[in-house]
Amino acid sequence: MDTTSRPMIEAKQLTKRYGGVTAGRELAETAVSHLTFACQPGEIVGLLGPNGAGKTTTMRLLTGYLPPSSGAAFIAGHHTVNASLQARQHLGYLPETVPLYPEMSVAGYLHFIGKVRRLDDVWDRVDQVLEAVGLLDRAESFIGKLSKGMRQRVGLAQALLHNPDVLILDEPTIGLDPAQIVEIRQLIASVGRQRTVLLSTHILAEVEQVCSRVILLMNGRIQADLPLSQIKQGGNQLTIQLANPSAQTHEILQGIAGVTAVYPDTPNQFLLSFDGRDETRQLVAETAVSQNWGLLELKTNPHSLETLFLEKLKEAQTPTLSLVGGGPGRGPNA
Ligand code: ADP
Image 1 (cartoon, protein in one colour):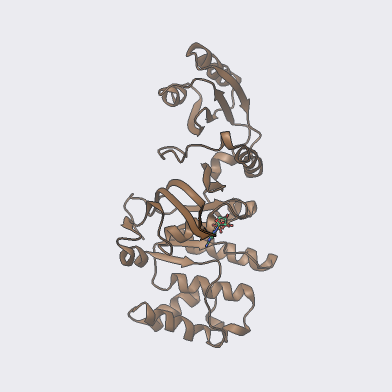
Image 2: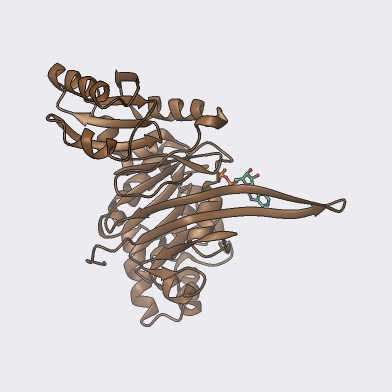
C-alpha cells in the first residue's frame, strides 16, 4: 500500500471519441469528455451513472486498455500509455466480462495468470488470493461449474494476484443474485481496506454501501464529485445559485461563520455544508446580497444520493446546465 499522498488514480481532461467512417462520412461519438478527477490512497470511489454514461469507457482509459483521444490517465503516478508496464504493476482490473476458461480449475487458472504476469512464488500468491476472496475450498473446482457469484470471486482473485495497490472494478455485481451481490460488496469493502478502489455501477445502493465518495457521470461528463458523508448530511447542506459569482465567491462563502465546507457544483452554483443554524443561512443570504452576486436561489437540501442523482440527471438532459466543476481542489470538468 502506498503511503504517500500522491493520487493513486488520476484522470486529466480524459476524452474519448469513438470514430468510424460510414458511406464516406466520418462519424465520431464522444463517449467521455474532459474528465478530471483524482482518487487518493485508501479511497473507495464509486463511478455512478446510467447505462451509456461512459463508465466502461472511463475504466478502459484508466486501465490503459484504450488510448484516450486527448488527455491523460495515471495510475500511482505512471502514465497509462507511456509507462503502461509500471502503471499495470500497481493496477488490478476487473473488466465487465472477465475472460475465464471454464475447463480450467480455479487454482490452475490463477496459476496460469500468475505465470503470464511473471510473478515469483506463484502458488503462494494463488493461496493468498484464494483465501482473500473466500475460495480456498473451491481451488480444485472447474470454473465452468461455478455459480456466477463464485466466478466473480475468481475475477477478483485474478485482479488481486500481483497484490496491486489500485483496483478498478467495472460493474462488479452486474448479473448476480441479491445474496451474491451482498457477498461481493462485502468482499470489495474488505479488499478495499488496504487499497484505492474505483468501481463503476448504475446502482445507487451499491455506492451508498461500499464507497466513501461518488463521481456522478452522465452523458460522458462529470456531473458531481462528492464525499458520501456530504450527501448523507441531510438538511445540513445548502445550495446557493448566483447570477454573478466572482472569483472570490468560493473563498468568501468558506469564510462565513457556520459554513464548514463549500463545493463548486456548476459555475453558478455552490453546495455548502453548514451547522444547520438559521443564523448561518441568514448570513449566507446577506453576504450574497452585499457582494452583489445576484442571488437567484438559496435552499436547504433534503439530501440523499437518490435526490442528487435525479437532480443531476435532469440537469444533464438540459444541455446548457451540463457543464460543472468537481469537488474541493479538483479542476473543472467542462
Ligand atoms: P456505460 O459503461 O456507462 O454503459 P459506455 O462507456 O459503455 O457506457 O458507453 C458510452 C458511450 O460510448 C455509449 O454511447 C456507447 O454507445 C458508446 N460506445 C461504447 N463503446 C463503443 C465502441 N467500441 N464504439 C463506438 N461507440 C462506443
